[in-house]
Amino acid sequence: MPVITMEGPFLPLDKKEKLIKEFTKIATEVTGIPTNAFVIFIKENAYENMGQGGITISEKLKMQK
Image (cartoon, rainbow, N blue to C red; front, side, top):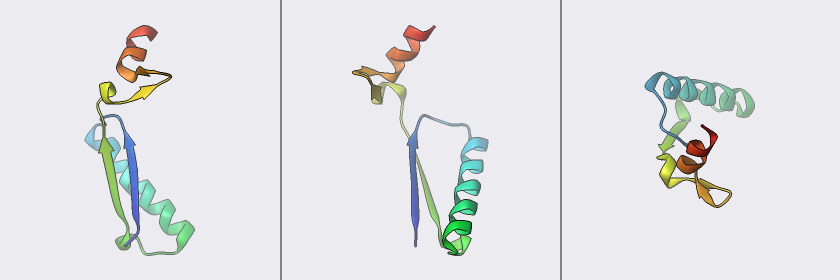
């Protein structure tokens, strides 16, 4: 059972459903493995739990406003 994992910010349900559909579609096209074999994990993280350039993403977003 192939597994695809994406980590990122919280997303609305409709975007998660689209990601699952599109990840599965592309992976099947590329590998030839049937769609029902794929398992997709979307791991959501709060912006204060992610950092870039030595600061949290939440702080970076505040600075951009």
